[in-house]
Image (cartoon, one colour):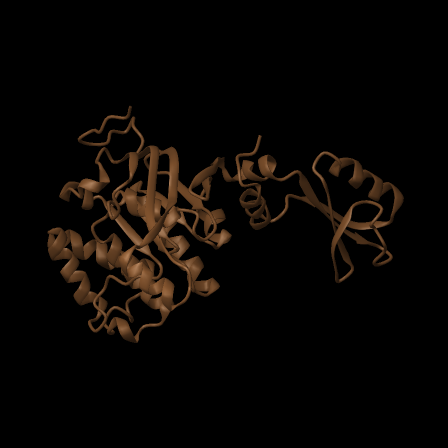
Length: 337
């Protein structure tokens, strides 16, 4: 049994979860007028387990990717850890606090950023909303201005914070939103799709800012994203969840070895393209380069055969793209042996 603490110490994890579960009773009915009338008198429901008995620990200063398809339970978990939802059962402690109690000391130390939600005042410049945030958190004015100006410089917002938020593009709005969420220098960052809908340049800028914040303040970050570039750039460790259950918890680098038994071999021949199907599964042929999929164990032997049998100009052996590995994890539906 995990016991709550009044404060987190350097020796204990920043986030501890054990047996966490969240269920919802969802109304169901058949289509049609008769079913609609019947539901007014007797409403039928079914139980949906959004999060089903999960457990993990995250150390102080870690940046962890929390991955899963839509409906896997990622956002529900983040909402329970930030205190927005009350768990059906199980235990969760964040910096020694029980999130559902929503204590002021807890709320001052966390933040949650959702890529499709706005917290700043729509018709006001971001600077005005930042002043409101300063008042809410009772931040010391000089320290607040130092932090604000530092973040504005890091994200190149000097020309944007004077404009009404409604006049900003999606990417610009996301940047000023992130600054607003971090002005109180939280120790825990729950980031739910912070780069959703943004172009590649803007995604990279926000990833760099999150990495800088983590390094500068030692913050703990739990990140959900459908963009694997976010995860690869920021996270050494990932937790993969599907149908409310954890399928994998470990290093991102080890994910491929555990859930994927293949390698890809890229071959460019001196004499141009040739039929290489005898060496493995041909998955692409582009600009004279043939890409083969072979079993992980057979990759060295296949590469040796290619070099022995053919005039090879270039040959590479790589793990498959991380997106493909994650897809195989989801398809497995259960923990790998």
